[in-house]
Length: 244
Image 1 (cartoon, one colour):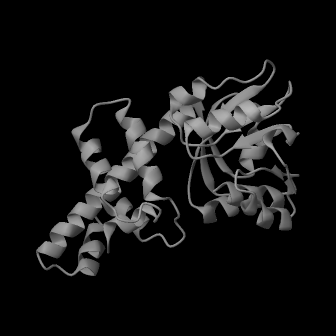
Image 2: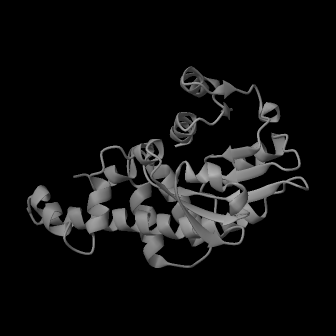
């Protein structure tokens, strides 16, 4: 997703400097017009965006980045509201949490839904280049709503996977079952399972359900997480857990 966001910003005329812990991943972006930083400390920008796997990675990168007064740090990872609020930035640096809903294709087309909390206005011109900005409230509000959305996503796909298992056991044609289910309560999950450009690893969906379980005790969310953990290829897109 970070690469898609970079390509979108470049297409809108923004100057973008990129850094990735895996240097090889920067090469296509440099070829597309971005500048490469050799380390987070070398990034000199008015708006700094982080898009990383988990809270530990975000803390490490933010600590290593030279954020000067007047800079806006936009944290777009899915790490939960508390992890966002606990981030430490230098005095004079504004912090925005702005995780997104949408596919890589939506990012490249500027059609993401951006769930923003904190000093949103300071980052609005950049965020609006990426899609529709939803003002969620104070710092951490965007991260909280993203966690809610991903809980719905993970539990919905897990429920669909179990429903398809019942259909298979009952010798129901799976395509027919999905066609019918698409018109019911699991319609959104069916559409997501059939989305061709989706690339959200199952392992990250499990991580998000675990974050949700840190906030609430829920047998249903626990069961959904167990379904996702049982998938043999944790790097595959979440939709593949349905097995249709």
